[in-house]
Image 1 (cartoon, rainbow, N blue to C red):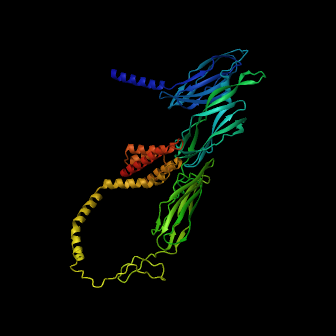
Image 2: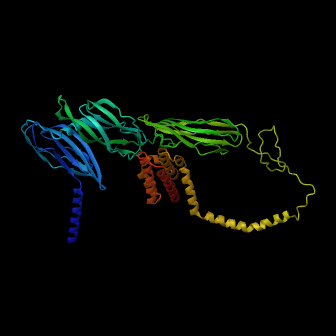
Length: 584
C-alpha cells in the first residue's frame, strides 16, 4: 500500500509540474486610477491556445482592443514564447471594481486568470493614461491577412495578401518580420513585390492608409480544416506625445510595436468523384490542350518535333501531361519538358509543353493517335476532357517496309525507294580462275575443328549466364539504379537552377510513387505517403529519408540553396528511389 501511495504521489507531482509549465495571467498598468484616466489590461500566456474568452469588464467601457501581440526568442538554445491580448478600459464611476477571470484552452485544458481588484478615485487634475504611446499604436496599427476564398477545392489556388493598415494619426518608420508563416499543408509560391506602394483605404469604416507587405499563392494539398499561420512583424511607430515644440506642434515619440495577423482557417473540399475521368491526374483550373507536329511530310532519317501543350490558369506544376502513343516503327526520344509560367494574384498562368523528337526510318504513313487531357474547373464545379486530333505523318522517301529478295531466297539487306532504279551490287561474288578445291584445305580443317574447340567456351559461357540469372539481388540492384536514373533524368537537367531543380525533383518523387503504387500522390500529405509505404513493408529509415527529401523540396522555395546542396539532394534521391525499389 505504501508503494501504491508513493506512485500516486509521484504521478500527481509530475502532473502538477506539467500544469505549472503553462502560465496564463492578467496584468494591469495600475491598480489605482482616477475616474478620468484609462487602464490597460494584458492577458499574457507562455503557450499558444484557442477560444480566448475575456471577462465582461463590468464597471468599465472598453475603449481599445482586443489587440494581439506575439513574441518569440531563442536564448542559449531555449525557446521562449509569449502571446498577449490587450484591452484599454475607461472606468464608468468611482469605487472598488474587479476585473473578472479570462479563460483560454491550451492543450485541451481550460486555464483562468485570477481576478484583479482596481480602485477608482475621483478625477485627477493631470490624467496619465497607462502607456499612452502603446495605446495610440495599438489602436491605429493593424495587420490583416486577406484570403481570396475560405472554402477552396483540393489543389485550387488561394491567394493570401498581408496588409498593414496605418491610421493618419501615426506613422511607420521601419519594420521587419519576426515570425513568417509556414504553409505546411500547402504547395506555396510567393509573389515578388518589387516596390511597396502606399494606398488609401478603409478599415472598419474609418479612413486608413495601407501597404501590401506580402503576397502568396497557396494550393492546398489535403482536405479538411487547414490553418494559415499568422505573420508577425516588429514595427517602429511614431506616435504623438504630450510634449510640444516652440510653435505648439505636438512632438512624436518612436516606440517598437509587435503586431501579428490573425490565424485564418480554410475548409478544403475534396474533388467530387461523380464524373471524374479515368485519365484525370489532378489538374485543377481552366486549361486548353493541344498536340501539334512541326511538319507532317518529310523523308526518312529526317526529324520532326511533336509537342504536347497545356495552357491556362491553375496548378500547372502539380500534374503530368498525357503521353503520346506512337507507332513502334518510329524512333522516339525522351520528351523534353519546358515551362513558361508566371505567378500573380490570379494564380499560376502560362504554358507547359513536352517536346518529342521523332525520326522515321522507313517510308510510309504513320498516325499519331489522339490523346486526352482532363481537368477540374472549380468555377463550374465540373470535370472537362479535351481530346487532340489524329496527326498523320507522311514519310515520302526512304527504305520501304519490306526488303528485296534475291534469287537464292535470301534478303539483300537493301530496299528500293521505287521501281525506277535497280540496286547496283558493290561487292560482286566473283571467283578466281584456277581456284584450289575446298576439301582438305586449311580452311576446311579449321572449319571442322573450331566447333569442337568452342564447346568448352560455350560451357563456361552458359555457367556464367546461369550465375548472373541466379543473382536476383544483383539484378534487382541494377534494375533499381536504372529506374532511379530514369525518374530523376529531368531533375538532373535542371541542376544549377534552384527553383526548376527542386520542382522537377519533387515531381520525380511523386511520379515514382504513382508508377510503383498506382496512387495519386498529389492528393496526399507526407503523413499519408509514410503510412502507405509502411504498409508496403518499407523500413522506417527509408521512409524518413523519402519524406525528408519532400521537405527539402518545400523548404527550397523559401531559402537559397547552393550547387553543392542541390547535387547532394539529387544523389540522395537516387539512393532513396533505388532503396525503395528493392523493397517494393
